[in-house]
Amino acid sequence: MLAGTLGASLLLGSAPARADVQELVGQPAPPVRARPLHDDGEVDLARYRGRVVVLAFVATWCSACRRAAPRLEAMLDAHRDEGLVVLAMSHEPRARIRQHLEAEPRRYPLLQCTGRTAVSYQADGLPTLVVIDREGRVAGAYQGGTDATLGALRRDVERLLAER
Image 1: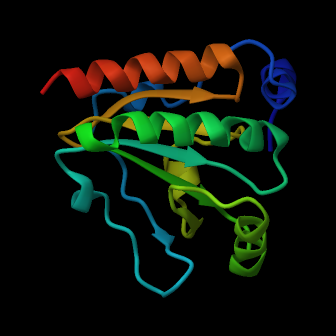
Image 2: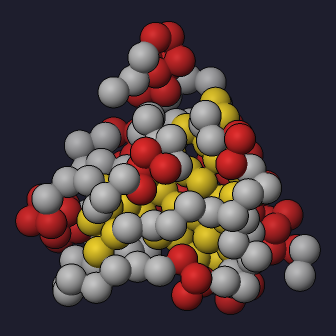
């Protein structure tokens, strides 16, 4: 899954690291294949055009993902009215995701990621956080759940929200 020192540091939550999606920055966001937990519908990013979207690739067993969740919720609470959307995605079975949400509810959706979405976004570390601008372009990406990483994500989000 993760290779080398970078991967180990991301799992351990050390220094902030830009994800390997930098070649996607400025490009249209790849399609997302994910299902809500309550039905078999597909999530379509085009539905969120005009809003700033944070895609969070996570797992229920990931301690860094769990530590990042309250910060993502706080960011969403502070900026929802300005057009921020947070969508979390996990490749885990729906039953496991549902069980996790019963124990640790979230104020943003946690979707079941299907297809090759994580590969398209090069989300090879957890959490991988991708910011999509109002026009549907990848504006930035981070891996890890450190304070520095989440602070950088917050600054990117706030900058994009201010660019109306």
